[in-house]
Each structure stands twice: as C-alpha cells, then as structure tokens.
Length: 200
Image 1 (spheres, rainbow, N blue to C red):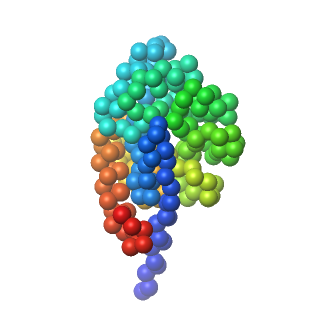
Image 2: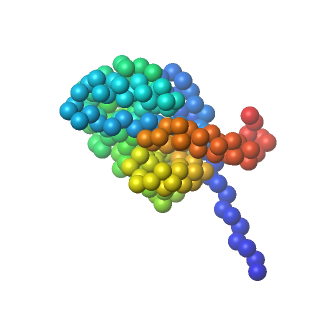
Image 3: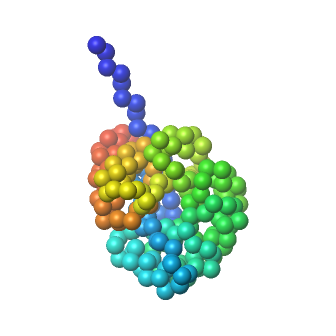
C-alpha cells in the first residue's frame, strides 16, 4: 500500500519591526499577552496588565481597548502594544495613538495596509489558517491566533503547537510562559528543517 506524501510546511519569509526591534519570523512566533479589558475602564488596571505582560516575558501586549486606553497602555512601557480591532476606523485610531500593530479580520487587511497601518490577520481558528495564508498572499502580513478563550490548557497547547508550523507567527495567550515554551520548541524544530541555503 502506497502512503500519501505529507504536504510540505509553508515557508514564511517575513520580518516584523515593533517599537524599533526587528523580529525574524521565518520560523519564530511572537508571544502576545492578552490584556483583559478593565472592568470599570480604569487606566491603572490597563497599565498594570501591560507591565505584567512584559515581566512575564511577552513580546507584546494584545489589547481590545478604546483608543483613549491604548495610548496609556503604550506609555506604560515594557512591551509594544497591539490593538485588536473590528473596523478600519478603529485600526487607524489605534495606529494614530501609537499601537505597534493592529490585529484585524481578513476583510480589513487590504484597507488597513493601504492606509499604512501595521497589521496582522487574526485567524478565528486553526481550520482557517490555510485560507488566511491565501488571503494575505505576498503582503508582509503575519498571521495571528488567539488561544486565551480556550476552555482548557491542553486545547490551547495543541492549537499553538499546530498553528506555528502552519504559518501563524503571533500567538495571543493568557499563559505567556506556556506559550513561550511552545514557540521556542517549535522554532527549534522548524529551524532544524530549514534548507542549507536559508542560513542561520
């Protein structure tokens, strides 16, 4: 019986610059700490959450916040801030107050990129990664996936472990240390499989 060949993993040729630091995303995924919206819109809660993200080792903080709170979150320092948005107006407003990146659905990617907004495509679930790659095409737009709302640690771990080889390069999480271990382990495996011509 002839076994079907395993399809090759997608090649990601991408670098992303956030707050002056450039990340090589050929096989590495960034870890984004999800900042929970404050219960009463209090700025100090947001500042504390962003600082905690940096202390936990996140590459950036990911927030679903109005522009009036995105600005203070950025000024909290420690890590760049990405804003999760659902409209072009929100994407532009977040960029104007200094968001390093906006996470947007597929229907906003082209318009946001054309407006000069640094953008990542937020994939709803692992089954949508292949389609998201085709939607991005040749644009320098990373794919992101959010595991923070998943019901169990095991489910989140499984999704993160599969998402990176499929091409996701931003993992949004409520467990930075776990996701960092996943990102580093998978990066080592992908780097070991690279062609010799790829270089270090």
